[in-house]
Length: 335
Image 1: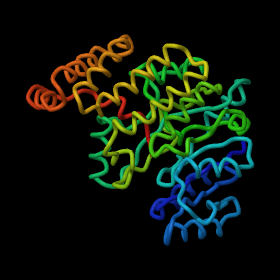
Image 2: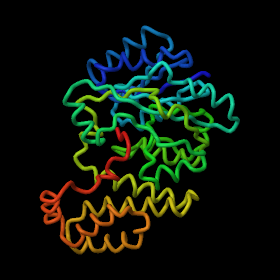
Image 3: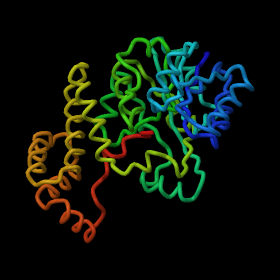
Image 4: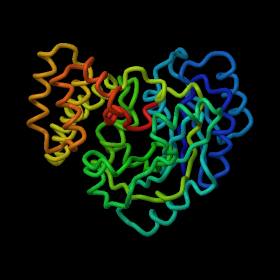
């Protein structure tokens, strides 16, 4: 295997050297593509330093050194990658030595395999970041899927099964030819959840197989600057994501069950954002038609909120127990 690793870089000088060295420790990695996303000062200087020390490290920048976001940076990196396999790594994360072990076996033994995904662990940089992360992820530190499924069942499982889990972009290895074939790469107009949107579309368009889903192949760097745990409008960003996926699903030939669940998730996010009673009742009626896609827990809390209103609803939960599950707010890394 010969792998190109794409790393978008923005204000990551404290973590970048560890990320790059973790990639280069893997014999399969033949090039690391750093895509500077409009960094200034120390971060850009660190990119230049690393690129000057190892010919396997390539530094790219957007025209005029502008900031265009992680999606545009990954797209630029993929466009310049020269190896037959592509992997991704965030600048504050790191690979483990076993990162590509499963890929060797699967790509050799499974002729139709076009991608492999695995489990992601966590490395905490402070007690505060650990506390925030564990609260956001309900104590879980391993990001993975619950079981092995065939490629044709992956999208359905990711979207419709609440107990299935998800995988991180940092654990995905995909053939370059697949990325040349699919409709689009990363959505450059999404501020968060770009990787979730990409993974869902890729799961429908490519043959992705589970690799190491029990033990991590990479570590997420958890620190106070992580954007996913600092998201102050999870319902709003989820609404944007699921609206986009609904539009895609309508023209992509995905199963009706998947389209129905995406629609239900979009409506759930809209319901959380709704202010007026008329808007809540309108969305609630649509959710009632899609109630087959909701769990009993979700039905109870959605329709309680619809009747009581958001303020009384919050007061009731303050008195009688925990609030409703924040799903679909927690839908992945979402950097």
